[in-house]
Image (cartoon, rainbow, N blue to C red; front, side, top):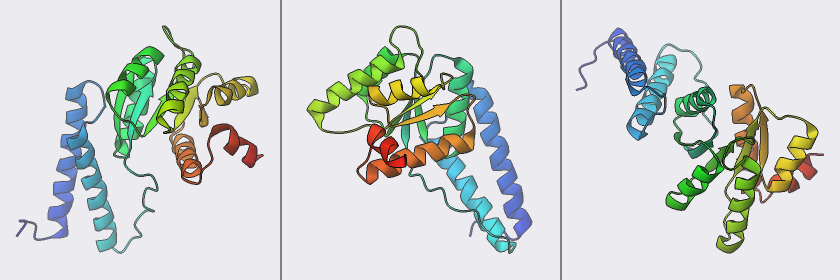
Length: 204
């Protein structure tokens, strides 16, 4: 027995869980969930789906993205918070690097499924970091998805990002729908055997 007798009991428990998660974010300072918080959020999403089904309403389409471990390479604190918040709400785990050099250090220590890469940063910019990552992959044989997330949105900036070896491009200001659509597009292309410049050519 779980102690819940009515739908109102479930609703009250769900509301309390949401409140606890919000307070956990506030106490953490940065809204960057660790795995327990990400799991709790996925549990809340599942409970929301269940309540919609019990009430006779349609459940939302399932998230097409697998749970990812993302490296956010960004020197702006507000953008760091926004990206980790958006990814965390989808259940994804994040690490933060403030520049390209820190990104290379993270990648030497831990595996990642995705990199969201700012272009203009101190110490080492996104172009140089991506070039270094791709140089290392020529030896390893793997391909890490890298998406530029930048305020530099001209065609020249996009071409330069793709030439450096990035797989996708997302402009700022960041829109959640656009970001996740680009992540989905890049991962789908990689699963199909296309990446970066090849995918861009096929789209045109």
